[in-house]
Image 1 (cartoon, rainbow, N blue to C red):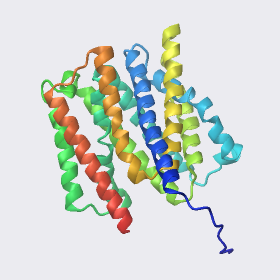
Image 2 (tube, one colour; image 1 turned 120 degrees about the horizontal axis):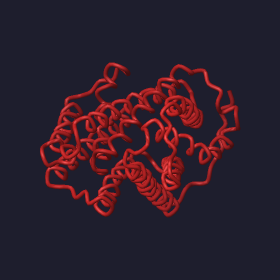
Image 3 (tube, one colour; image 1 turned 60 degrees about the vertical axis):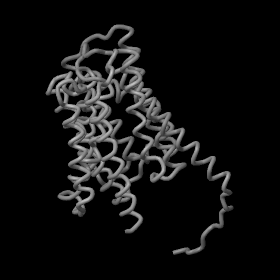
Length: 307
């Protein structure tokens, strides 16, 4: 094995600051674009079958992902030794997406976004039996506090309480599935699977599965609904590419907290477009949930550095 390494020019302090600044702006921009895609789903008002909306989100995202396929070496990027794990990742990702999309139709936009950030809480819990990780008392307490924030939002008058129980449970079930999806991705990463392969397998597989579910219940969209469906897929893919590029430029330890800016974007759009003004319980619940999520993230970083 060749042990020679190439000497790269040292990065100056100003270059480092500029790179980090672009990465932070990329995450903020991606969160805003994701929020726009969520607003388009909510704007459909549940008038189209859920499977049809999920299909269009995946189908119209594929053109924006084609450059990723090209950069990864073309169709060779689809070669994998982990088809079963890709299947698990696809199914859990689809259920997570469907749970969020259903939530957008019955709950305030910011509430769904905040409930989606329970994913790190479920990820912490599921990593114990599925990954054999140890969760200390600090992270355990942070998880309990985070779910306390969910209860605050579910109180009468809170954002989750203003919808219905099924919507709240659907979003939380979706968050569980996203956590399972993240665990599956982590396993595939440890097995040597590339990011491009993981993303492309999900895009193609999710399109096929959601297509099979959508065709029997297909409803002809209006021109405006077509535009919203196409926009949902394209915006979601663009945001995904932006987020990936941001994390390529900057450290995860720096960027992860800025993902929570999505709550600010969705709150603003909810107020302007649907008059969804958060009350005190909403604000308290979101603050508790975000605070616990950030603490868990901070502990994960500290433990990762220690390992």
